[in-house]
Length: 316
Image (tube, rainbow, N blue to C red; front, side, top):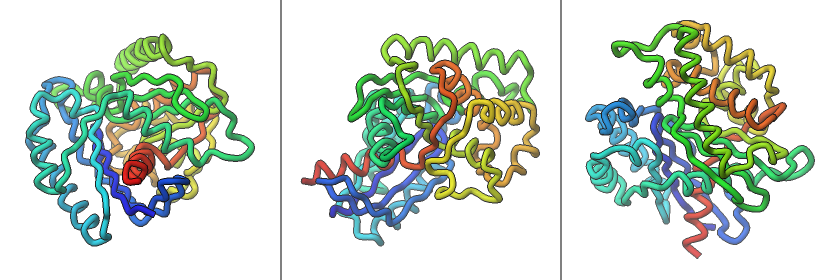
């Protein structure tokens, strides 16, 4: 077993997984898994730059993660950065800060690389009846959404610039304030962007060919927690739960009609997702409608698990 640390730094959150991984079998024993909402992608869609306060929030989380990694005796650490840093003209400042704190240089991966990590992490544990291949893995991030089709491995993938933070900032923010709740015109504008992006993805990814839709990341897991009516966020209950399309539509409609206070009062809602969850749920609903899925299988295993497995494999 190789003890590895995987860090996934996206547009909305930065997450850490420390695990012992068998490079030959892919078997993993989780030692620590945590997430901090840092909103690194704050304003990137508009300015093209990482904001100073967003960088400092991210570096604060990195300091915490460095302590965890050191205390657990990690052998190999890998830091993957995704949509926000791909788009930022000052990403060198981010790279330098992460290296100073963690001793590794962040890999600013392409959308295709991100998709492959997500697919590997999500599908390695899909065994037994009810998990029919080919799979469509949809990873709804803050800045982008990855759509991946495959059975034993990735057969087609596309990353498109529709994420819960990007869609919120582009269409729901007026004078620095999120519309509460959004207007019908704002919702239509999001749907227009999402539908255009999915049409683009469908040129290379056969969305309707999949037999099992697997949903990843905070927007999807939060919708699942709401569907399960959980009194608090419970990863064990959420992992591999199934949410039907009608239920997703109802939850999305509820979130789009809710005020900030009403969304914040939902027991499973992370404070960092309150203002972006409606856009995230709408993206999920649109994907399900586009690919003809009657339900989504929700996975707590995702890009982090894929990064950890790949990192252990490289250590062989």
